[in-house]
Amino acid sequence: MSDTTIEDESAPRRGYAKGRAKREEILQAAIGMFGEVGYHGASLREIASRVGISHPGLLHHFPTKAALLEAVLEHRDEIDFADFDRDLEQGRSMFDALVRLVQRNALRRPVVEVFAGLAAEATSPDHPAHEYFSERYPSTVRRSRVELERLAAEGRLAPGVDPEVAARTIVAIMDGLQIQWLYSLDGPRAQRVDMAADLRAYLDLIVVDQAG
Image (tube, rainbow, N blue to C red; front, side, top):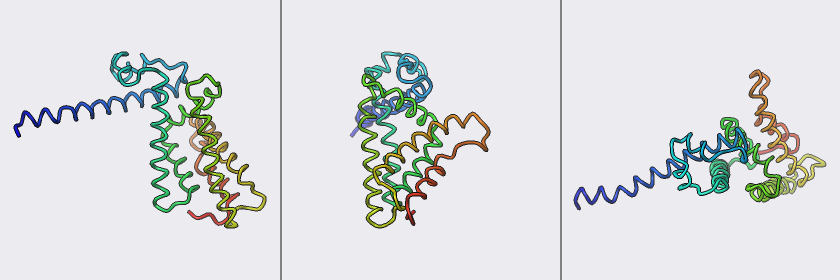
């Protein structure tokens, strides 16, 4: 096989890798902008400018702003679920893995900003992310409830804890802590909200002898 043939075969792979890298760059810029100004305030032209491409160049990767938003949400879930599932595979309990997920989110302010902002915006039925959050919340609550029911069957829930109520409370605490944490970043470090520690404190109240 000649050198020319090798170059010809590798060119599509290089182009594909370059395209994936640019797509990732666009997603990161979109995360930043959605976090700063929300979905409705974000401009595709500004996002394109931030990554150094033309507006048509951005549309080649994401034909609409709604498509870009969908990709941002999918990207966030891919990262979170990959880390979460890895913790479970390593033998950690579901709630220990959840606390570790919150710890990682404390290192990703733009991701937390965009999620918190979009969750509030998307309560409107005509918002492009409304269906995503409408499906995500029941799914998240259900997953926590199943785990709490399992712990209850093992006698490991504190007296009086209702798995359904506790599951909704866990999700509410996580979302509320994100907002309080974002506000606390502007204040003294000593007063910064520790999302993971606060979530752990609640879990320790409802779970007896929790396995780590």
